[in-house]
Image 1: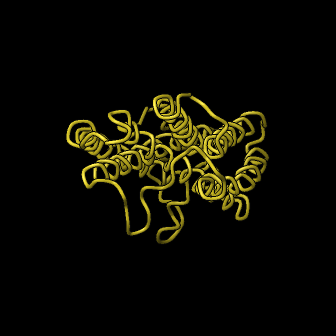
Image 2 (image 1 turned 135 degrees about the horizontal axis):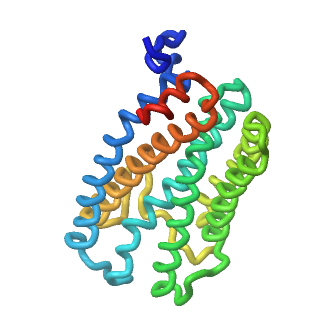
Length: 253
């Protein structure tokens, strides 16, 4: 029996906390999430750009929300998930938890950047400027810096254990910024419009809302697939001295 297929001690769902067990599972699941993301994105973009009506106030420029809103939501959500796994790794010293946090950070940073970029494109025809020091925009920019800071700490410290602890502290401290982003339009007088989607209620036209929610799920599926693929790379990098990782590197499996 090869080193790759050797049984790993553990019972129930906790056996997936072992990197050698989680590695093939992530590889098997990632293509399905990417496929779902592609299908949902095609449906959502078609509904958003060709079926949804023109907004009576913003005209055609509002259609950027089908990219902007999902990316903004995912940027905040991924940060919370990253901080959760970083915290679990910090408290319980579990290797895979820290690897998951490291794998989430680049995708979260991408979502934060995409949110800011699409927001700028939306802001130009709406506010007359690509950027204003609005509370929501500024706190989202801070979120991007938190992601970049997390990745920078990981790269700057040679010892993975010390890097995990330092970046986990930063991630946990930065969690306070997420509710600031969400509630900024309520706490301060901002240019950014308030929430149009609320719990159990929305002021959006049905087709617009449907298109946006389909795109939210498309982004969600993409992010899961991207994180699963990236965590496989992180696992191989950190486990490169083990027999099973060396065998995978040698065979390309």
